[in-house]
Length: 343
Image 1 (spheres, rainbow, N blue to C red):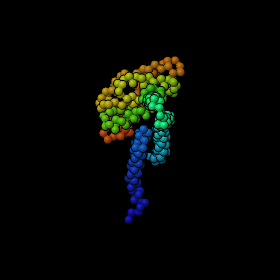
Image 2: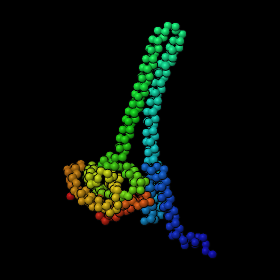
Image 3: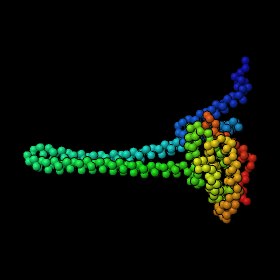
């Protein structure tokens, strides 16, 4: 009879593969749960965990498996922080609206109390009239009281309209502030393009609607060399100029954003072939010589980027689609090497 130890040794490779499959499945489940718990923060967690899965497939070393544990913990911590920040923001919005409503209710209560006192005094006067014998005085008093009552009712209606108008004005001001805060929260401060958070929301909406779309990922070639050689001011100028040129190469309804660092993304409502034609136009009109000031004298830099393109497939997650675009971009990156160099 074969011993348990020999059985394990003879099947060690198969056991390792099975363990890695279970590990990758656990990472995928974590990403899906993160999206369900907090969609705005979950997409980034899902993409980060998918990249870890890909590395485990390509290079399953014991060191990488040990390192993955810490990276998973870091991804989950970042997801937790982003989720907490998102829900804190929603809590503040709700609290401000409730404060506006409370102030309005208080104003309405004060108004009703004021008119309740007036109506009580009016009722007392009517009761006094019942004990009077002079019909002329009764008639004059009734006319006077009726006029006061009508004036009170009219004033009450006007006050009610004023309260409603004031409330509408407060809510409108809050809505304007909220829209401006949302706009700022969705814009990259350096380039003015849509930021990663906004692009993730755009992608989620398209998937929910089942719309056909494609994503183009851009990674500037040799950007680190620009920062190291000419300084970060020159690097920021390159990013801003590239963002402006990239935005100009697409229609207003296309979503153009900065994904992070020197990576950019464009989301188009089209299939893969049309997206690839857009890439060729970008190569022609966006890539090229840029005049950059930086810390010293103006200089020309030749700027281009590696580009990855993927079209969304029905039933596919955002992370899976972006991972395909990322692989496509990475293959180009390895082929071209660093190309952003002084002219």
